Image (cartoon, helix red, strand yellow):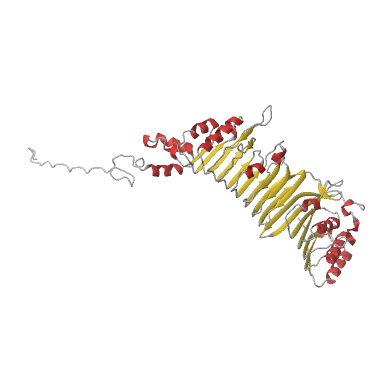
Length: 470
């Protein structure tokens, strides 16, 4: 185009279309919801990875396509919700048989009424989960006493955990069994373990945590099962004491026990195939001991690969004869070949109590004694810690081969104990670790110890001195 002035007007170039900024992976830009267009199976795979039924239900707000999909999940977890909300959600689930179901009601939503707990258990049983975790807080006490809650028959369940705080549970009425149950965990509720285990013909793993109860049966653990391979019994509450333990499990391989012993605690343990044991018993009553002074505080038995080690923590703090002797407690234990003693005795003589335990544990091969300096009353000339004094002349039949004594002062009592060990045991090695410099034995005591070692050349003898602390 030419103007009157003779100048030519050029047309402007056509502007290029602006590129839309789209994230990679969205070619076409048609705005369609391609995730919602996926098959139901893939959408359910997405939801199950949320690990929370409530979060999965919230996806219904994305579009109609997602609405109600969570009801068809085969793995559902309901956590941190009230019992009313969980109860309503359970009845919306469409799946006839879940692979996993978790119901967890925290303390702030405590379920007080046993009838409500029973309703939730029935709602869970309706979904026939293969794996069920059921956990809630409650308060079972009624003016007429505890109201028991009947456990439904979970016919399809292979793994079941019941953590029902402060409620009383009973097995289904009649002779109904849990036919497929292989793994069972019962925590913080009160239940008759003998009857429960009898209803589980395929049970392989059983864990029970004892809860405070006035019910005598709940404080007595009885497990007689031809199928159980792993058993865990524990009490984490210091105010709970176990009255008795009765185990008969011919194929049991692993056993763990952590309890506080009641005043008249009794044990019956039959497990000929057991390979691994962790046995930890506290004796807060201080009614198990030897003589007037020695009292048992803790007893621990560990067995790995058929080698058993018994550890006993013993304090010199009694003032009268105990109700039960060490021998009574040890006789109830599985076999062991190593004895380790933690003697909190300060300056008291240990010969009498060690001699007594050697007579009780005559089959041990190794003895380890660690003498601690726990505060206790001073030892007097006629102190009962050394009673009965005839232990020095005893002949003990023992298979002991290795001895390690740590913290000896080299006193007359210590020397007499060494004489007893050399005289009665077919020793192969003897290790003595003397107390720190602040309480070294006299030259005469040291010479007597060395002379004793020289008189037994067939025994490998070693003497060390503990470093001073501080």
